[in-house]
Image (cartoon, rainbow, N blue to C red):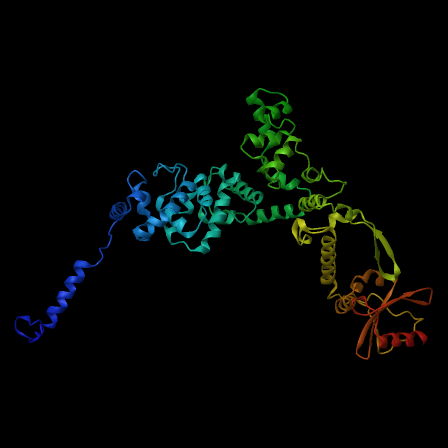
Length: 499
């Protein structure tokens, strides 16, 4: 039987162009149809997945947020996660168009960008979401997330929510980088210098005032400055007199009891702060957690550091809140007795001194707690000693002032022995030999001791000589790391002393 070639024979003659248009027609008839609108996308999702997107299950405005971003099949899988996110950040999740809720499309963008629901909720609660977040959030990169978290942190603080001001997005981001006290200072300064303005921009932040307040916080060790700033610099006298007139009360103690019946012992300024909406933790400057702040106010708001250390097994004087918390943790582990152990320190010219760590607690800083509250007493004070030595060395490393000379009754030094007569030489010797001679500057300057560097046959050691009424006494002769000196150095010193 003869085969028919449809491209060349009889009725089956088909040109190449005819075949091309036939294929094109099939492509147009059977290709996937493009979804052209959010309404069409919602209708398709509900027809394909009625159990997930049904009319009685979810509002169409939430379903349509994924149009142009996710296919209906993927959206059906991911929608439960988005619905939980919406419920977490919306004030009234069942009423989509409520003013208490964020825009659904904006919420979808925040969900895709990985922004926590608490951040979006705080911005909505502070009524700052329209300033910070808009429809462009869909294109947010992950690098923007820390900035939004900082903005939400600033928006939810009491100083921002009670100021009745609007904030630009950049202003909130900048304020979010500050602690609550410094944010309060920045807002108060803006309100004083711009009495008629209701919108605070980033350029309106007075950084000089913030820097001055930060110096006060750093210099303050008692926590009083921080506690005062947490009050948002209220005019306490005017506020108390106004409250007295409102309640018809003559005694401020009675007023405090009226304003805060749960804390009758606290001062009037704290009572006013509670009445204005501040939390107990805010009144403490943010240094106490909720449980601690509640107990603190119940006891009449005493000084915070002694309050934290009131239950220590032994009394310890401390002025730093972080260090006091560490002491409490040490006491809980039973290690507080190490503070009261008597120790001996060896100094220049053979001097010794007895000391206890408990008398030097205020020398500790937060940086010395290398393992946080798990740091032991010895580790903390060793870290403090290293820090003090480093500070001392940084000061004297380039100090080439001559502080001593060789006594006249001593013969000239040989080539192998060198007098360390400047602070810089002492610091260098201490670093290179790994011992504490770098801290002997004051003793050398007063003439209590003489320090020499001995170098013989490629070996090194450090010699300390104490002058005794036109005579000398070898106080110590040490090698590196306070080990025994090398034999060539010992012979060089013996030969010099014989002469």
